[in-house]
Image (cartoon, rainbow, N blue to C red):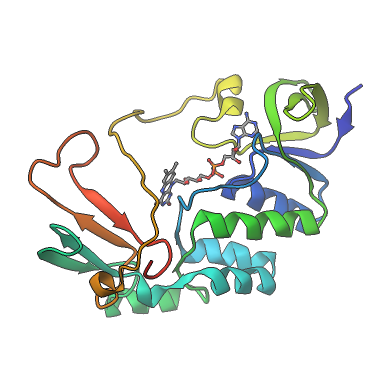
Length: 247
Ligand SMILES: Cc1cc2nc3c(=O)[nH]c(=O)nc-3n(C[C@H](O)[C@H](O)[C@H](O)COP(=O)(O)OP(=O)(O)OC[C@H]3O[C@@H](n4cnc5c(N)ncnc54)[C@H](O)[C@@H]3O)c2cc1C
């Protein structure tokens, strides 16, 4: 007999897991979500949010879409994709992107009633997670997925409570592995992953500084910095990414 029973156990409170939980709870399906950390994403990571994603948020309810739009940077501020030697240096060129070119803007407007926007993961996750919990999802933080055993009727999953140091089991009809790119659930299932890992190195630096005078006249979410010799690892370019306009 397992310690806890639910219909769906979701491992991971990232965008995939939290959205799954919010949708299941909206449809009245009992579910529980676990995250090995004590809180949600602490870095902005995923941000360019497309129209289809916004339609999913609209399906969750107009208040969910509205809250996302309240925190998002609007599409008008996204699209002057700049290539430069440095933010304060020579500009090599610009490319209109993310649907701000008039031709592509028309396609966007015809494709969906929802708008592309820039919403860092630090804002998106709490919106999805809160929607899930408010609608009935049972959430357990500091709880790590350890292993699972599947049989004809469902799944028994072992989790580790990082606060008490104790293991417990969850019996569910389904287990969702939303535990990210290095998914242990997928590994335990033996699911094959296509593609090559570690093709380029990268380092992320999060900083706050008023950059208005360098970027506000050419609003974009991405500024590609190209310098001779900057070809170690990665893609040979640096990238200054807007998290909040313009600091
Ligand atoms: C530094 C960085 C920068 C990025 N920049 C961008 C970007 O600019 N644009 C973009 O679109 N995407 C970006 N990404 C990618 C984006 O963050 C991912 O595509 C997205 O987060 C995937 O969502 P997910 O819900 O599948 O997984 P994740 O967001 O990775 O969430 C996985 C969840 O599973 C939990 N978890 C993992 N293992 C366990 C376990 N054993 N037990 C319990 N919980 C577990 C984690 O704590 C987390 O809650 C970036 C990623 C990183 C790391």
